[in-house]
Figure (cartoon, rainbow, N blue to C red):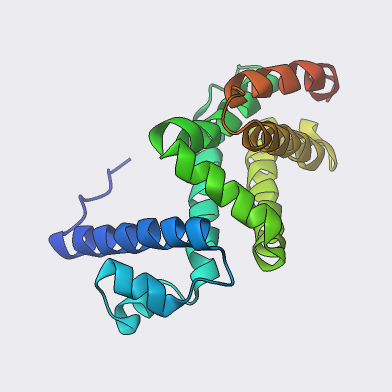
Length: 202
C-alpha cells in the first residue's frame, strides 16, 4: 500500500486555522452558552472574519458536530485496525476508548466537560449529536460485518455497535455528572464486562 503524501503547507495552514476557530468557538460556547454566543463573537475572539469562519464551518453548531465526526472516524479506524483474532468485546472496547482518551486525556478535559454539558442542554446540538451517533453506529457495524463475513448475520453487527456506543454514552455521562472525578476508562471497562456475555454470544 502506497502511503498518503504528507500534507502541503497550504493544507497544514488550513488545518491550523480550522483548529483555532474550533478551540475559540468551543471555549465561548461552553462559557457563554449556545444561544448567547454568536458567530460574530467567535470571529472577534479569534481575530478573523465571518468569511473565514464560513470557509470552514457552515454554522456555530457545525463546530461541535465536526468534533463529534472526528471522534467517529477515530473509532472506526481503531476498530478496523484491531487484530482479526482478537475477541470482539476487546476490539470494540479499544475503539470506544480511543474517543474517550481524546476527550479526557489528549484534549482539554475541563473544556470537554463543558462541551458535553452544552450538548446535553441544547436541544439543537443534542439532536445533531444523536444523528451523528447514528453514523458512528453504521460505520462500526460496517467494519464488524466486513470482519465477520457471512457469519455475522443481519443483526449482530448493528446490535454490537449499538451496545458499544451505549457503553460510551454511559461512561461520558457519568464522567460529566461527576465533574470529571469519575474515571471514564474504568467505567467503560465495567460496561463492557457487563456486555461481554451478549457480545460473545454473537
